[in-house]
Length: 268
Length: 268
Image (tube, rainbow over all chains, first blue to last red; front, side, top):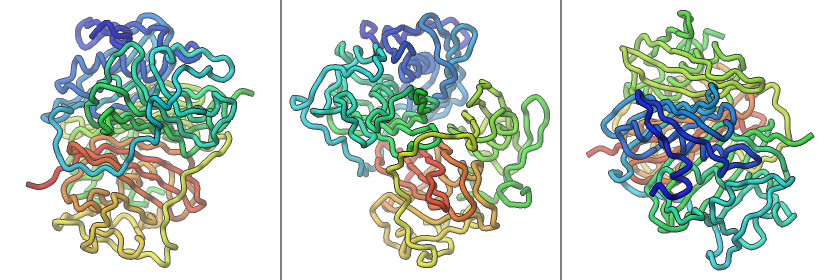
Protein backbone atom coordinates (compact mmCIF):
# COMPACT_ATOMS: atom_id res chain seq x y z
CA UNK A 1 0.00 0.00 0.00
CA UNK A 2 2.90 2.33 0.66
CA UNK A 3 3.58 2.88 -3.01
CA UNK A 4 0.58 5.16 -3.39
CA UNK A 5 1.19 8.89 -3.24
CA UNK A 6 -1.05 9.52 -0.25
CA UNK A 7 0.60 6.75 1.75
CA UNK A 8 4.13 7.80 0.83
CA UNK A 9 3.47 11.46 1.58
CA UNK A 10 1.73 10.88 4.93
CA UNK A 11 4.16 8.19 6.13
CA UNK A 12 5.32 8.57 9.72
CA UNK A 13 8.27 7.05 11.56
CA UNK A 14 8.00 6.26 15.27
CA UNK A 15 10.58 8.12 17.33
CA UNK A 16 9.37 6.85 20.71
CA UNK A 17 7.13 8.21 23.48
CA UNK A 18 4.32 9.04 21.07
CA UNK A 19 6.47 11.14 18.74
CA UNK A 20 6.58 10.51 15.00
CA UNK A 21 8.67 11.94 12.20
CA UNK A 22 6.95 13.03 8.98
CA UNK A 23 7.82 14.83 5.76
CA UNK A 24 5.61 17.52 4.27
CA UNK A 25 5.89 17.17 0.50
CA UNK A 26 5.06 19.70 -2.21
CA UNK A 27 2.62 17.39 -3.98
CA UNK A 28 -0.54 18.52 -2.17
CA UNK A 29 -0.06 22.29 -2.47
CA UNK A 30 -2.38 25.10 -3.40
CA UNK A 31 -0.42 28.25 -4.19
CA UNK A 32 2.71 26.80 -2.60
CA UNK A 33 1.02 25.94 0.70
CA UNK A 34 0.13 22.38 1.69
CA UNK A 35 -3.57 21.59 1.64
CA UNK A 36 -5.14 21.40 5.08
CA UNK A 37 -6.65 17.99 4.49
CA UNK A 38 -3.21 16.63 3.59
CA UNK A 39 -1.73 17.95 6.83
CA UNK A 40 -4.65 16.49 8.75
CA UNK A 41 -4.14 13.07 7.11
CA UNK A 42 -0.45 13.18 8.07
CA UNK A 43 -1.22 14.00 11.70
CA UNK A 44 -3.91 11.31 11.69
CA UNK A 45 -1.45 8.66 10.47
CA UNK A 46 0.61 9.23 13.61
CA UNK A 47 -2.44 9.45 15.83
CA UNK A 48 -3.97 6.22 14.52
CA UNK A 49 -0.68 4.42 15.15
CA UNK A 50 -1.16 5.10 18.88
CA UNK A 51 -4.90 4.69 19.31
CA UNK A 52 -6.47 1.48 20.57
CA UNK A 53 -9.29 1.79 17.99
CA UNK A 54 -8.57 1.58 14.26
CA UNK A 55 -10.75 4.25 12.66
CA UNK A 56 -11.30 7.99 13.05
CA UNK A 57 -14.97 8.64 13.83
CA UNK A 58 -14.81 12.39 14.37
CA UNK A 59 -11.77 14.57 13.88
CA UNK A 60 -11.33 18.28 14.68
CA UNK A 61 -8.32 20.11 13.23
CA UNK A 62 -7.33 23.68 14.09
CA UNK A 63 -4.77 25.13 11.68
CA UNK A 64 -2.19 27.36 13.33
CA UNK A 65 0.36 28.18 10.63
CA UNK A 66 1.19 26.77 7.23
CA UNK A 67 4.30 24.56 7.41
CA UNK A 68 7.01 24.64 4.76
CA UNK A 69 7.91 21.60 2.70
CA UNK A 70 10.31 19.39 4.64
CA UNK A 71 10.62 17.54 7.93
CA UNK A 72 7.93 17.71 10.56
CA UNK A 73 7.05 15.87 13.74
CA UNK A 74 3.78 14.75 15.24
CA UNK A 75 3.30 14.28 18.99
CA UNK A 76 0.43 12.03 19.96
CA UNK A 77 -1.35 11.79 23.29
CA UNK A 78 -3.95 9.13 24.00
CA UNK A 79 -6.40 11.17 26.05
CA UNK A 80 -8.92 8.47 26.91
CA UNK A 81 -9.07 4.74 26.21
CA UNK A 82 -12.65 3.53 26.19
CA UNK A 83 -14.40 0.32 25.30
CA UNK A 84 -16.16 1.48 22.14
CA UNK A 85 -14.37 4.77 21.47
CA UNK A 86 -11.07 6.40 22.36
CA UNK A 87 -9.96 10.02 22.12
CA UNK A 88 -6.52 11.29 21.20
CA UNK A 89 -4.69 14.45 20.34
CA UNK A 90 -1.98 15.12 17.75
CA UNK A 91 0.25 18.16 17.41
CA UNK A 92 2.14 18.69 14.18
CA UNK A 93 5.32 20.75 14.52
CA UNK A 94 7.89 21.91 12.01
CA UNK A 95 10.72 24.38 12.43
CA UNK A 96 10.07 24.61 16.19
CA UNK A 97 6.54 25.90 15.65
CA UNK A 98 3.29 24.07 16.15
CA UNK A 99 1.40 24.12 12.84
CA UNK A 100 -1.69 22.04 13.46
CA UNK A 101 -3.51 20.60 16.47
CA UNK A 102 -6.00 17.79 16.11
CA UNK A 103 -8.51 16.14 18.45
CA UNK A 104 -9.92 12.82 17.29
CA UNK A 105 -12.36 10.31 18.68
CA UNK A 106 -11.78 6.88 17.18
CA UNK A 107 -13.74 3.65 17.04
CA UNK A 108 -14.20 0.57 14.89
CA UNK A 109 -16.23 1.28 11.75
CA UNK A 110 -16.42 -2.46 11.16
CA UNK A 111 -18.34 -3.00 14.39
CA UNK A 112 -21.15 -0.49 13.87
CA UNK A 113 -24.78 -1.52 13.98
CA UNK A 114 -28.14 0.16 14.32
CA UNK A 115 -31.17 1.45 12.46
CA UNK A 116 -30.62 3.27 9.17
CA UNK A 117 -32.61 6.44 8.44
CA UNK A 118 -31.05 8.53 5.70
CA UNK A 119 -32.75 11.52 4.11
CA UNK A 120 -29.57 13.01 2.65
CA UNK A 121 -29.08 12.19 -1.02
CA UNK A 122 -25.92 11.89 -3.13
CA UNK A 123 -25.15 14.94 -5.27
CA UNK A 124 -27.02 15.22 -8.54
CA UNK A 125 -24.03 14.42 -10.77
CA UNK A 126 -24.39 13.17 -14.34
CA UNK A 127 -23.03 9.67 -15.04
CA UNK A 128 -19.23 9.70 -15.17
CA UNK A 129 -19.06 9.18 -18.94
CA UNK A 130 -21.16 12.32 -19.35
CA UNK A 131 -18.80 14.26 -17.08
CA UNK A 132 -15.70 16.21 -17.98
CA UNK A 133 -12.27 15.36 -16.62
CA UNK A 134 -9.12 17.38 -16.51
CA UNK A 135 -7.99 20.07 -14.15
CA UNK A 136 -9.29 23.60 -14.23
CA UNK A 137 -6.68 26.34 -13.93
CA UNK A 138 -7.19 28.27 -10.69
CA UNK A 139 -7.93 32.01 -10.85
CA UNK A 140 -4.93 34.32 -10.89
CA UNK A 141 -2.60 31.63 -12.19
CA UNK A 142 -2.33 29.99 -8.76
CA UNK A 143 -0.67 26.59 -9.04
CA UNK A 144 -2.21 23.61 -7.31
CA UNK A 145 -0.12 20.45 -7.30
CA UNK A 146 -2.91 18.74 -5.35
CA UNK A 147 -4.97 18.74 -8.56
CA UNK A 148 -2.53 16.18 -10.03
CA UNK A 149 -3.18 13.76 -7.18
CA UNK A 150 -6.86 13.30 -8.06
CA UNK A 151 -8.95 12.31 -11.01
CA UNK A 152 -12.00 14.57 -10.80
CA UNK A 153 -14.98 14.53 -13.15
CA UNK A 154 -17.32 17.50 -13.35
CA UNK A 155 -20.73 18.07 -14.84
CA UNK A 156 -20.27 19.74 -18.25
CA UNK A 157 -19.77 23.49 -17.87
CA UNK A 158 -18.73 23.15 -14.22
CA UNK A 159 -17.04 24.45 -12.23
CA UNK A 160 -18.59 27.62 -13.63
CA UNK A 161 -15.73 29.90 -12.61
CA UNK A 162 -13.30 27.73 -14.60
CA UNK A 163 -15.39 28.45 -17.67
CA UNK A 164 -15.54 32.18 -16.99
CA UNK A 165 -19.06 32.03 -15.58
CA UNK A 166 -19.32 31.56 -11.83
CA UNK A 167 -22.61 29.75 -11.27
CA UNK A 168 -23.74 32.06 -8.48
CA UNK A 169 -24.47 29.04 -6.27
CA UNK A 170 -21.77 28.26 -3.72
CA UNK A 171 -21.79 24.55 -4.42
CA UNK A 172 -19.26 22.30 -6.12
CA UNK A 173 -19.65 18.60 -6.81
CA UNK A 174 -17.49 16.05 -8.57
CA UNK A 175 -16.71 12.38 -8.98
CA UNK A 176 -13.37 11.89 -7.26
CA UNK A 177 -10.73 9.16 -7.11
CA UNK A 178 -7.00 9.15 -6.56
CA UNK A 179 -5.09 9.53 -9.83
CA UNK A 180 -2.73 6.68 -8.95
CA UNK A 181 -5.45 4.11 -8.34
CA UNK A 182 -5.36 4.18 -4.53
CA UNK A 183 -8.72 3.11 -3.17
CA UNK A 184 -10.59 5.21 -0.59
CA UNK A 185 -10.37 4.38 3.10
CA UNK A 186 -11.07 6.29 6.33
CA UNK A 187 -7.69 8.06 6.15
CA UNK A 188 -8.49 9.33 2.66
CA UNK A 189 -11.85 10.56 3.91
CA UNK A 190 -10.03 13.07 6.13
CA UNK A 191 -8.47 14.61 3.02
CA UNK A 192 -11.21 14.42 0.38
CA UNK A 193 -13.62 16.88 2.06
CA UNK A 194 -10.95 19.59 1.65
CA UNK A 195 -9.80 18.62 -1.86
CA UNK A 196 -12.22 20.46 -4.14
CA UNK A 197 -11.66 24.08 -5.25
CA UNK A 198 -13.26 26.72 -2.98
CA UNK A 199 -17.02 27.17 -3.22
CA UNK A 200 -16.45 30.94 -3.01
CA UNK A 201 -15.15 30.93 -6.58
CA UNK A 202 -18.66 30.08 -7.80
CA UNK A 203 -19.82 33.34 -6.19
CA UNK A 204 -17.16 35.26 -8.10
CA UNK A 205 -15.25 35.79 -4.87
CA UNK A 206 -11.69 35.07 -5.96
CA UNK A 207 -9.19 35.16 -3.16
CA UNK A 208 -7.28 33.06 -0.70
CA UNK A 209 -9.57 30.82 1.35
CA UNK A 210 -7.40 29.38 4.13
CA UNK A 211 -8.92 26.76 6.41
CA UNK A 212 -9.15 27.88 10.02
CA UNK A 213 -10.70 24.69 11.32
CA UNK A 214 -11.80 21.47 9.66
CA UNK A 215 -13.92 18.76 11.20
CA UNK A 216 -14.76 15.43 9.60
CA UNK A 217 -17.19 12.74 10.69
CA UNK A 218 -16.28 9.39 9.14
CA UNK A 219 -19.57 7.49 9.03
CA UNK A 220 -18.66 4.26 7.22
CA UNK A 221 -15.77 2.47 5.52
CA UNK A 222 -16.01 3.22 1.80
CA UNK A 223 -16.15 0.42 -0.77
CA UNK A 224 -13.56 0.57 -3.58
CA UNK A 225 -14.38 2.85 -6.49
CA UNK A 226 -15.29 6.42 -7.23
CA UNK A 227 -16.47 8.85 -4.56
CA UNK A 228 -19.18 11.43 -5.15
CA UNK A 229 -18.23 14.61 -3.32
CA UNK A 230 -20.27 17.76 -2.80
CA UNK A 231 -19.29 20.93 -0.95
CA UNK A 232 -21.78 23.66 -0.10
CA UNK A 233 -21.53 27.12 1.44
CA UNK A 234 -24.68 28.87 2.66
CA UNK A 235 -23.34 31.75 4.74
CA UNK A 236 -20.57 34.13 3.67
CA UNK A 237 -20.30 37.02 6.10
CA UNK A 238 -17.74 38.94 8.10
CA UNK A 239 -14.83 37.56 6.09
CA UNK A 240 -15.60 33.93 6.98
CA UNK A 241 -17.53 31.12 5.37
CA UNK A 242 -18.37 27.52 6.14
CA UNK A 243 -17.77 24.68 3.69
CA UNK A 244 -20.03 21.69 4.36
CA UNK A 245 -19.03 18.58 2.49
CA UNK A 246 -20.48 15.13 1.96
CA UNK A 247 -18.65 12.14 0.57
CA UNK A 248 -20.62 9.19 -0.86
CA UNK A 249 -19.05 5.90 -1.88
CA UNK A 250 -19.66 3.81 -5.00
CA UNK A 251 -22.55 1.97 -3.36
CA UNK A 252 -24.30 5.20 -2.42
CA UNK A 253 -23.40 5.14 1.27
CA UNK A 254 -22.69 8.45 3.02
CA UNK A 255 -19.15 7.78 4.22
CA UNK A 256 -18.05 11.21 5.48
CA UNK A 257 -19.35 14.63 6.40
CA UNK A 258 -16.97 17.54 6.65
CA UNK A 259 -17.37 21.07 7.88
CA UNK A 260 -14.77 23.78 7.83
CA UNK A 261 -14.58 27.40 8.82
CA UNK A 262 -12.47 29.26 6.29
CA UNK A 263 -11.35 32.84 6.05
CA UNK A 264 -12.18 34.73 2.87
CA UNK A 265 -9.14 36.88 2.10
CA UNK A 266 -9.95 38.95 -0.97
CA UNK A 267 -7.23 40.88 -2.79
CA UNK A 268 -7.04 44.64 -2.35
CA UNK B 1 -24.46 39.91 34.68
CA UNK B 2 -23.43 37.25 37.15
CA UNK B 3 -26.95 36.96 38.55
CA UNK B 4 -28.17 35.03 35.54
CA UNK B 5 -28.26 31.26 35.81
CA UNK B 6 -25.89 30.61 32.91
CA UNK B 7 -23.32 33.03 34.29
CA UNK B 8 -23.56 31.71 37.85
CA UNK B 9 -23.34 28.09 36.74
CA UNK B 10 -20.39 28.57 34.36
CA UNK B 11 -18.45 30.90 36.68
CA UNK B 12 -14.75 30.12 36.99
CA UNK B 13 -12.18 31.19 39.58
CA UNK B 14 -8.56 31.71 38.55
CA UNK B 15 -6.19 29.44 40.46
CA UNK B 16 -3.02 30.55 38.64
CA UNK B 17 -0.96 29.19 35.73
CA UNK B 18 -3.98 28.83 33.47
CA UNK B 19 -6.00 26.73 35.90
CA UNK B 20 -9.55 27.64 36.90
CA UNK B 21 -11.96 26.24 39.42
CA UNK B 22 -15.57 25.59 38.38
CA UNK B 23 -18.69 23.98 39.79
CA UNK B 24 -20.89 21.67 37.76
CA UNK B 25 -24.45 22.27 38.88
CA UNK B 26 -27.52 20.06 38.47
CA UNK B 27 -29.52 22.76 36.69
CA UNK B 28 -28.55 21.78 33.11
CA UNK B 29 -29.12 18.02 33.35
CA UNK B 30 -30.80 15.55 31.07
CA UNK B 31 -31.47 12.29 32.90
CA UNK B 32 -29.11 13.28 35.71
CA UNK B 33 -26.18 14.06 33.40
CA UNK B 34 -25.05 17.59 32.61
CA UNK B 35 -25.80 18.74 29.07
CA UNK B 36 -22.74 18.82 26.81
CA UNK B 37 -23.30 22.40 25.74
CA UNK B 38 -23.32 23.48 29.38
CA UNK B 39 -19.99 21.75 30.01
CA UNK B 40 -18.60 23.34 26.86
CA UNK B 41 -19.74 26.80 27.99
CA UNK B 42 -18.04 26.26 31.36
CA UNK B 43 -14.76 25.23 29.75
CA UNK B 44 -15.08 28.17 27.35
CA UNK B 45 -15.47 30.65 30.22
CA UNK B 46 -12.03 29.63 31.48
CA UNK B 47 -10.54 29.54 28.01
CA UNK B 48 -11.81 33.00 27.08
CA UNK B 49 -10.33 34.41 30.29
CA UNK B 50 -6.88 33.49 28.96
CA UNK B 51 -7.20 34.22 25.24
CA UNK B 52 -6.01 37.48 23.68
CA UNK B 53 -9.14 37.64 21.49
CA UNK B 54 -12.58 38.09 23.03
CA UNK B 55 -14.88 35.78 21.05
CA UNK B 56 -15.00 32.08 20.13
CA UNK B 57 -15.09 31.74 16.32
CA UNK B 58 -14.89 27.97 16.08
CA UNK B 59 -14.94 25.54 18.96
CA UNK B 60 -14.44 21.75 18.91
CA UNK B 61 -15.38 19.76 22.00
CA UNK B 62 -14.71 16.04 22.50
CA UNK B 63 -16.63 14.56 25.42
CA UNK B 64 -14.71 11.95 27.38
CA UNK B 65 -16.88 11.10 30.38
CA UNK B 66 -19.86 12.69 32.05
CA UNK B 67 -18.81 14.55 35.20
CA UNK B 68 -20.82 14.40 38.41
CA UNK B 69 -22.32 17.49 40.00
CA UNK B 70 -19.72 19.28 42.09
CA UNK B 71 -16.27 20.82 41.82
CA UNK B 72 -14.29 20.72 38.59
CA UNK B 73 -11.20 22.38 37.20
CA UNK B 74 -10.33 23.70 33.76
CA UNK B 75 -6.74 23.91 32.51
CA UNK B 76 -6.18 26.36 29.69
CA UNK B 77 -3.29 26.50 27.25
CA UNK B 78 -2.89 29.35 24.77
CA UNK B 79 -1.63 27.41 21.77
CA UNK B 80 -1.05 30.27 19.34
CA UNK B 81 -1.37 34.02 19.66
CA UNK B 82 -2.06 35.60 16.27
CA UNK B 83 -2.98 39.04 15.05
CA UNK B 84 -6.53 38.31 13.92
CA UNK B 85 -7.13 34.91 15.54
CA UNK B 86 -5.72 32.89 18.42
CA UNK B 87 -6.09 29.22 19.26
CA UNK B 88 -6.38 27.69 22.71
CA UNK B 89 -7.15 24.43 24.43
CA UNK B 90 -9.15 23.71 27.57
CA UNK B 91 -9.32 20.50 29.58
CA UNK B 92 -12.10 20.03 32.10
CA UNK B 93 -11.31 17.64 34.94
CA UNK B 94 -13.30 16.44 37.90
CA UNK B 95 -12.56 13.68 40.36
CA UNK B 96 -9.06 13.18 38.89
CA UNK B 97 -10.46 12.33 35.47
CA UNK B 98 -10.49 14.43 32.34
CA UNK B 99 -14.10 14.82 31.24
CA UNK B 100 -13.96 17.17 28.26
CA UNK B 101 -11.27 18.52 25.94
CA UNK B 102 -11.86 21.60 23.82
CA UNK B 103 -9.96 23.29 21.00
CA UNK B 104 -11.05 26.82 20.15
CA UNK B 105 -9.97 29.45 17.67
CA UNK B 106 -10.96 32.92 18.83
CA UNK B 107 -11.19 36.32 17.22
CA UNK B 108 -13.07 39.59 17.51
CA UNK B 109 -16.62 39.34 16.18
CA UNK B 110 -16.88 43.12 16.41
CA UNK B 111 -14.10 43.59 13.88
CA UNK B 112 -15.44 41.44 11.06
CA UNK B 113 -16.01 42.81 7.58
CA UNK B 114 -16.56 41.44 4.12
CA UNK B 115 -19.15 40.62 1.47
CA UNK B 116 -22.41 39.02 2.60
CA UNK B 117 -23.85 36.14 0.57
CA UNK B 118 -26.39 34.14 2.51
CA UNK B 119 -28.60 31.46 0.97
CA UNK B 120 -29.48 29.78 4.27
CA UNK B 121 -32.88 30.83 5.60
CA UNK B 122 -34.22 30.98 9.17
CA UNK B 123 -36.45 28.06 10.14
CA UNK B 124 -40.07 28.24 9.04
CA UNK B 125 -41.50 28.90 12.51
CA UNK B 126 -44.93 30.45 13.06
CA UNK B 127 -44.97 33.84 14.81
CA UNK B 128 -44.28 33.45 18.51
CA UNK B 129 -47.84 34.25 19.57
CA UNK B 130 -49.02 31.37 17.37
CA UNK B 131 -46.49 29.03 19.02
CA UNK B 132 -46.91 26.88 22.07
CA UNK B 133 -44.75 27.24 25.17
CA UNK B 134 -44.21 24.91 28.04
CA UNK B 135 -41.95 21.95 28.41
CA UNK B 136 -42.66 18.59 26.90
CA UNK B 137 -42.06 15.59 29.14
CA UNK B 138 -39.23 13.47 27.76
CA UNK B 139 -39.93 9.86 26.77
CA UNK B 140 -39.56 7.26 29.50
CA UNK B 141 -40.05 9.79 32.28
CA UNK B 142 -36.49 11.13 31.91
CA UNK B 143 -36.06 14.34 33.87
CA UNK B 144 -34.42 17.33 32.22
CA UNK B 145 -33.63 20.25 34.51
CA UNK B 146 -32.16 22.07 31.48
CA UNK B 147 -35.73 22.53 30.21
CA UNK B 148 -36.38 24.93 33.10
CA UNK B 149 -33.50 27.18 32.03
CA UNK B 150 -35.09 28.07 28.69
CA UNK B 151 -38.31 29.50 27.40
CA UNK B 152 -38.97 27.54 24.19
CA UNK B 153 -41.91 28.07 21.83
CA UNK B 154 -42.88 25.37 19.36
CA UNK B 155 -45.11 25.28 16.32
CA UNK B 156 -48.50 23.85 17.40
CA UNK B 157 -48.41 20.06 17.51
CA UNK B 158 -44.60 19.98 17.73
CA UNK B 159 -42.44 18.37 18.83
CA UNK B 160 -44.44 15.50 17.38
CA UNK B 161 -43.07 12.87 19.75
CA UNK B 162 -44.26 14.94 22.73
CA UNK B 163 -47.78 14.69 21.32
CA UNK B 164 -47.50 10.96 20.73
CA UNK B 165 -46.88 11.33 17.00
CA UNK B 166 -43.23 11.51 15.95
CA UNK B 167 -43.21 13.60 12.78
CA UNK B 168 -40.97 11.19 10.87
CA UNK B 169 -38.68 14.09 9.91
CA UNK B 170 -35.55 14.38 12.03
CA UNK B 171 -35.86 18.12 12.47
CA UNK B 172 -36.76 20.23 15.48
CA UNK B 173 -37.14 24.00 15.55
CA UNK B 174 -38.13 26.45 18.24
CA UNK B 175 -38.01 30.03 19.38
CA UNK B 176 -35.57 30.06 22.29
CA UNK B 177 -34.59 32.47 25.05
CA UNK B 178 -33.27 32.07 28.56
CA UNK B 179 -36.08 31.77 31.10
CA UNK B 180 -34.44 34.30 33.43
CA UNK B 181 -34.15 37.07 30.85
CA UNK B 182 -30.44 36.68 30.09
CA UNK B 183 -29.72 37.97 26.59
CA UNK B 184 -27.83 35.86 24.05
CA UNK B 185 -24.11 36.37 23.51
CA UNK B 186 -21.31 34.29 21.97
CA UNK B 187 -20.94 32.21 25.15
CA UNK B 188 -24.63 31.32 25.06
CA UNK B 189 -24.25 30.32 21.41
CA UNK B 190 -21.97 27.47 22.49
CA UNK B 191 -24.80 26.06 24.57
CA UNK B 192 -27.92 26.72 22.52
CA UNK B 193 -27.07 24.38 19.60
CA UNK B 194 -27.18 21.46 22.07
CA UNK B 195 -30.22 22.61 24.05
CA UNK B 196 -33.14 21.20 22.04
CA UNK B 197 -34.45 17.64 22.54
CA UNK B 198 -32.87 15.02 20.27
CA UNK B 199 -33.95 14.96 16.63
CA UNK B 200 -33.99 11.14 16.84
CA UNK B 201 -37.20 11.30 18.91
CA UNK B 202 -39.05 12.60 15.82
CA UNK B 203 -38.05 9.35 14.08
CA UNK B 204 -39.54 7.33 16.93
CA UNK B 205 -36.03 6.36 18.04
CA UNK B 206 -36.27 6.81 21.79
CA UNK B 207 -33.01 6.23 23.58
CA UNK B 208 -30.01 7.92 25.07
CA UNK B 209 -28.27 10.21 22.58
CA UNK B 210 -24.96 11.20 24.18
CA UNK B 211 -22.81 13.78 22.42
CA UNK B 212 -19.46 12.38 21.30
CA UNK B 213 -18.21 15.60 19.75
CA UNK B 214 -19.74 19.06 19.33
CA UNK B 215 -18.42 21.82 17.13
CA UNK B 216 -19.82 25.33 16.93
CA UNK B 217 -19.02 28.16 14.55
CA UNK B 218 -19.99 31.52 16.04
CA UNK B 219 -20.61 33.72 13.02
CA UNK B 220 -21.86 36.99 14.56
CA UNK B 221 -22.72 38.60 17.88
CA UNK B 222 -26.46 38.19 18.42
CA UNK B 223 -28.70 41.18 19.07
CA UNK B 224 -30.89 41.01 22.19
CA UNK B 225 -34.13 39.07 21.85
CA UNK B 226 -35.39 35.67 20.84
CA UNK B 227 -33.30 33.17 18.93
CA UNK B 228 -34.71 30.91 16.22
CA UNK B 229 -33.04 27.52 16.48
CA UNK B 230 -33.30 24.56 14.13
CA UNK B 231 -31.59 21.17 14.42
CA UNK B 232 -31.59 18.65 11.59
CA UNK B 233 -30.36 15.07 11.21
CA UNK B 234 -30.03 13.55 7.76
CA UNK B 235 -28.00 10.40 8.36
CA UNK B 236 -28.69 7.86 11.10
CA UNK B 237 -26.57 4.75 10.59
CA UNK B 238 -24.25 2.44 12.49
CA UNK B 239 -25.45 3.67 15.87
CA UNK B 240 -24.40 7.29 15.21
CA UNK B 241 -26.09 10.40 13.92
CA UNK B 242 -25.16 13.98 13.22
CA UNK B 243 -27.13 16.94 14.57
CA UNK B 244 -26.66 20.06 12.46
CA UNK B 245 -27.95 23.22 14.09
CA UNK B 246 -28.44 26.81 13.08
CA UNK B 247 -29.10 29.71 15.41
CA UNK B 248 -30.62 32.93 14.05
CA UNK B 249 -30.95 36.13 16.06
CA UNK B 250 -33.89 38.52 16.33
CA UNK B 251 -32.70 40.50 13.30
CA UNK B 252 -32.51 37.39 11.13
CA UNK B 253 -28.72 37.05 11.19
CA UNK B 254 -27.22 33.58 11.24
CA UNK B 255 -25.23 33.79 14.46
CA UNK B 256 -24.11 30.18 14.98
CA UNK B 257 -23.85 26.83 13.24
CA UNK B 258 -23.38 23.70 15.28
CA UNK B 259 -22.63 20.14 14.33
CA UNK B 260 -22.38 17.20 16.64
CA UNK B 261 -21.74 13.51 16.32
CA UNK B 262 -23.92 11.66 18.79
CA UNK B 263 -24.31 8.03 19.64
CA UNK B 264 -27.74 6.48 19.40
CA UNK B 265 -28.07 4.10 22.33
CA UNK B 266 -31.44 2.38 22.07
CA UNK B 267 -32.83 0.34 24.95
CA UNK B 268 -32.86 -3.43 24.78
